[in-house]
Amino acid sequence: MDILERIKGLAAKKDISINALEEKLGFARGYLYTWKKKTPGIDRVKKVAEYFNVSVDYLLGTTDNPTSKEIDLKNAIDSDQTIFTWEGKPIPEQDIELIKRLLRRD
Image (cartoon, rainbow, N blue to C red; front, side, top):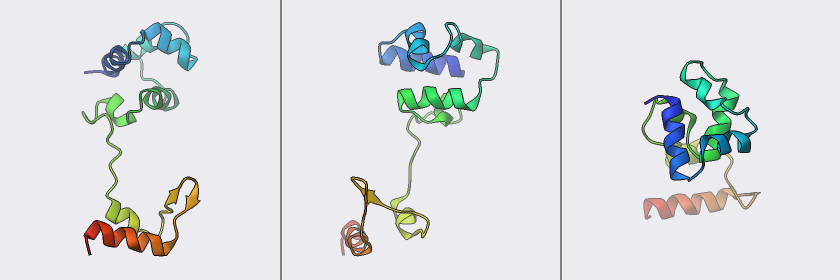
């Protein structure tokens, strides 16, 4: 299944026509149909993916899982690179430790 077919399927589920989708995203009329023969820019693909709340990988056909944004929470929590927030505020380290214990059922 190519990118246009995936978009058509997503649009049908959301009950929106391709023309209405193009208008909503600020694309020229008929633009999405050009993707059948022409490789689109990643910024446009990302815009479509965000609209349907699916991954770019799903649109490109590299996965059949539309929401393949899986994150192993253990790896994320143990990473020094991750900052966890709740309602826009950082979660204190002691609360993260509590969350870890709850998830491990300690």
